[in-house]
Image 1: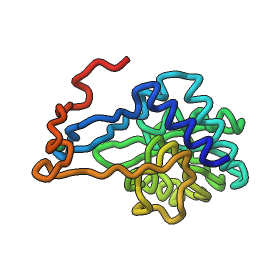
Image 2: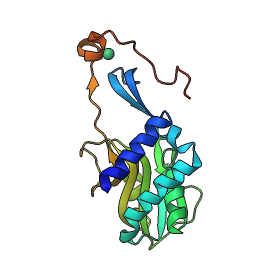
Image 3: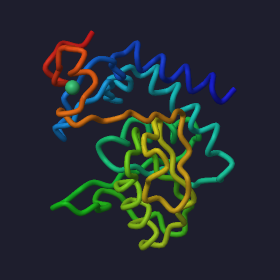
Image 4: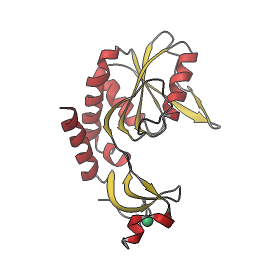
Length: 193
Ligand SMILES: [Zn+2]
């Protein structure tokens, strides 16, 4: 069951260009066989709603009162999870590099789940969770569409995720894709379907 859902999400990501296979130059300078941009999946409201529904099925047991997200990545999926659970949705945003709750009253005493599109280190999710905790909320869990942390995240508890991916990254000097002579593509420089 779990793997079927995971497969379906990965399939949708491939279909929508959110997950590309090839030979990519990442902003870090490293090379990768895969490139992921969740926004390309979430630009289709029906897919965003589907993913939000799956996450909500998994986090309902944590009995949240409110869903929160770090802007920008968590906005769409957080909203869809909240809608599916019939809960309010709030977001935190960066101001001078620091995560702040700018536009909403403090949901003091509420049980909050923090939702993100992709968790790599979990840094932003943790900032939101800790910020809300400091303001008197109970941070009861975290969730994402894609967990690419390989377990190496900074979250206190394992996040709920719809799929886990682990992409090897290569130094250009020892990239097997370069060795094969595959054309190097800089994501964003090509037209997506
Ligand atoms: Zn390469």
